[in-house]
Length: 317
Length: 263
Image 1 (cartoon, rainbow over the protein chains, first blue to last red):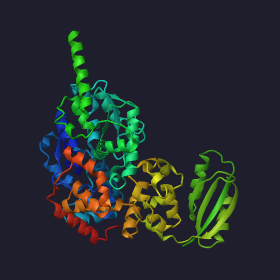
Image 2 (image 1 turned 180 degrees about the vertical axis):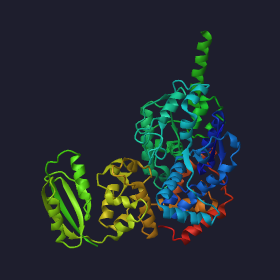
Image 3 (image 1 turned 90 degrees about the horizontal axis):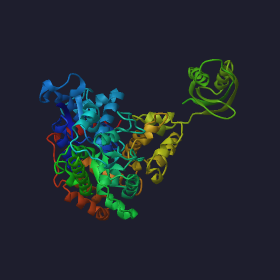
Image 4 (image 1 turned 30 degrees about the horizontal axis):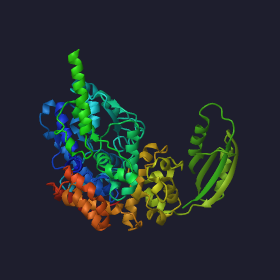
């Protein structure tokens, strides 16, 4: 087992329960020990950073300070590799990933800001030293677990399933991270390692509008429409995402797009963890697939049909 | 405030080395030279120098003329640098200093998914900040229409943190109580932050109700089908989840406000 401090983010308790369920379901199979950061708070996201800088950094840094403290209470201390790994704070939400990393880079860049933030944290009996590293769950799976391991553990390959990999914005930008920010490839490789077929998806790193869906509905529906159109014209049977906001926008607002643009898209929007879970033959209920609004049942039927054909073929030899 | 002198330089032949780049470095090393930019046309470089008396511009021109690789120098303009408090204010914010080195290529505007809905494109906003048009900038809808997708930031050849700048402008507008008609993003942000202050985490249902009550309650009807679907699929919590450290959150916020909040 590899242990990490885990920061679920607010969405996992609300609009993205399926993300949390599928993450829990696959983490055991992949040898990932995700230890939830105790009493974490919301990272503040874009709205707080746009209202007050110092407050927003203090709010975000509370989590970082908690993570620095928590590293000593991780179970099975001897299983943990030496070095930095203990200070990794893993999150599955691209928005939390970006906000917490932004806080780290601003506090590193402006020392006077860091001392002010520490003054705020001191009021809560905490201190931020600057040693924690925030990582995206997908990046941890991609780099630490590795696609070879996943490929070797696939129980039911998703043969012939055509998948559009949607990276969204905040996992690949603004800092050049683990993948090329101009043409990310990592999710497509994951799709291939699960036996499925990645389709070309030119808009894979374009914006879904994020939280602007609430105040600027029409503007955001336009963006979502483009994303769905691009996936559909490239023959995708489903889209996978790494971000709870992207999933909600593409999934819950798909019917709104259909009525506004007179289209008839019926594309299931899966979390990448749900797709991994399907290939590991984990039951759809444990992956939270019933919480997806655009039903994935038709797609699941196709997968199981192909599987039974393949099995028959093998029996007939 | 000093006086700005603009000099145009036509380069001659340079032996060896990396011609224009070395020339720029040499000019930048001069104490009064502020910026050097390559240009196309009759001249190759434009130099902006800050001087204390206008006559000093001629002296600098002569000094440049004396360099081996310079063919000719033309003093374009000598003018008193106007004070621009708005530019200084923006530059004092983290990330805002980048505004000074934007070269107005327009890559940000070309990359922006929402540029069509903006009063002024991101490139224009930077030009307006440099022109000191504080009121027009802070009452525009530009920053409120930014979805924080960071495409502009990732693509900017001069490393200007445009998304960060947009957030800074949002904070400036809010601090000076400057509003943009018909934009409800600030109300959403307020509802969101309120939820964090009360619970430590975001309670989506409460946030949405607060948002629609403070903006346009009727528009909530448009969202009902979506909310209903989310509810049916167990994706909307009915009750907020309050963290144990809510008091810590309050203490952090209070101390931040006592420190003057915004830098």
